[in-house]
Image (cartoon, rainbow, N blue to C red; front, side, top):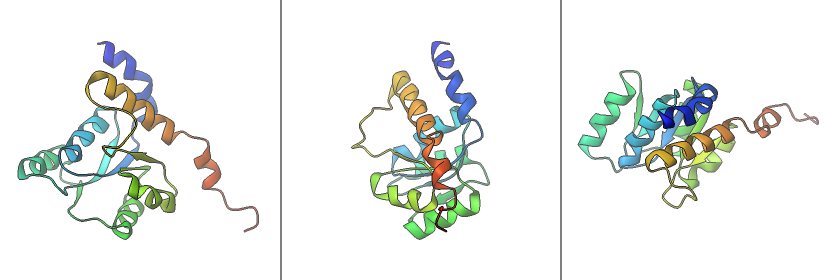
Length: 149
């Protein structure tokens, strides 16, 4: 009840946003679950370092149209972002430049991150960070044609 109240504004602003998640292990499905709970559409996620149980859970969460990436490289991630019209990349820091190249927001989800996403407080923090990244005014400027071009 309190969590739903705290997340209501974020759910309104995040609903329908399409994300690609590139991380490993248990985060591959737990972040999918959290993003879906916020009303986001997860179009792809990685399965690296995932157990067979993790992969089954990912398949169930993504549905038949969800894309799973066993091994991704920047070119593959860019292709998926382009083909799915993803709004955001959620991944480890080394993929930040992939998101910038695609001109979409990025959320660093690596274990070295500065915020915890565990529990109710963590869910609210993640929603806040997703919202801030997606709705930063810088993206409108980045997507415009350069004035000299």
